[in-house]
Image 1 (cartoon, rainbow, N blue to C red):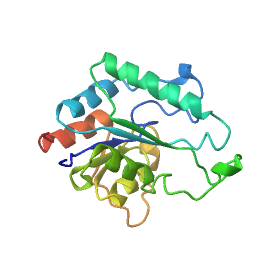
Image 2: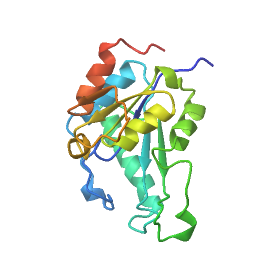
Image 3: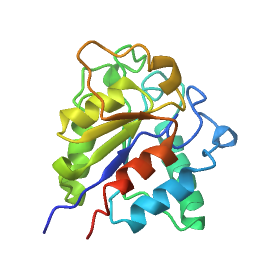
Image 4: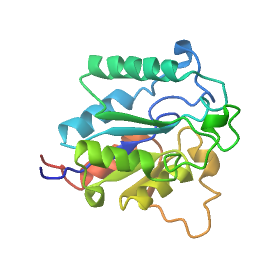
Length: 193
């Protein structure tokens, strides 16, 4: 199997509005450009895995089954617009979790590479030809931790954290939103099959 390029996406603050712990379906608001941006990546031949820290599970603020229902609803909305995510990867751990079994130093909580590594294995991804897009520096660092390039978007937390770049943190681009990030990636040419 030949490896394919991917664009790893953060969820809250990148694809949809960040409301803190998203704990009710009524709180889900996709950005107006989200479906078009994902569809453009799909059509250009990029795999689109979603990698999302869901420490609210460990904090007792949300239930794991609800996260699955939420992702199914996002899938439904994307499909209605001719777009799709190739895989959902979430981390329920939190260093201060109230659920003891989830209070661990794990290998999956961003910026650790565990979720992305699982996607790489599951989907046959070539990290060197891939990108990570997110609204926090941990997203940018995750991309670099797997050998991909990274883009920080100014939606969600991005505008607030843009001026507080960790020392030595590189980033390939800082843009206004997911649509601008996708435009930058596609300007380099299509991913191919």
